Length: 234
Image (cartoon, rainbow, N blue to C red):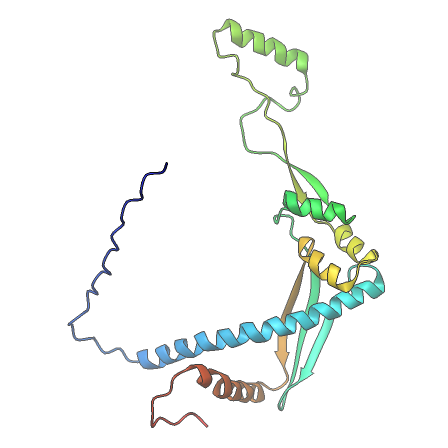
């Protein structure tokens, strides 16, 4: 029924243009490469830590919203580290208007009684002056005139308007004003709101750096192969 697929030959990897050449020495490259390698590993640590912190913050925001029966106020969060205090701000922001609610998302929100706005979205086009666009009689005269000129019957066409669905502050408030359980709110929340966490501050930068050094020694070196006879940083 179907033709057999053609056999695709795997192309050989292009040879490096610098193979066999003596590299030029660049001062500072070793430090830069080391920092880049460290940064790649630290970014993985940040992602893991941030996921846990964001979940804890979201739980607090949802609990506050349920208690207030509306979108929760921004919160100030803190923790005492090893020799320093850390703080940050967290809030629930309404989903941006340029993040359009899809048809599937709209069905879910409607089924759960969560409102949203429908805005008119007009594409860029050549069109009849809006002052005359609703005058059917005038448009029919123009249509007959174009027909006498021998122009195609579809020279003037009606282009239907296009709408877009967006979340509103009422969407977020309604989510918390209902009788939803925390788990349901957490599931529906991304459809109308975006939790944000930022403005991180530490009371003692030096102590924070020492804490990072300790985390790097404990976590990064677990993933990085250390050659035999090489001592890890203390």
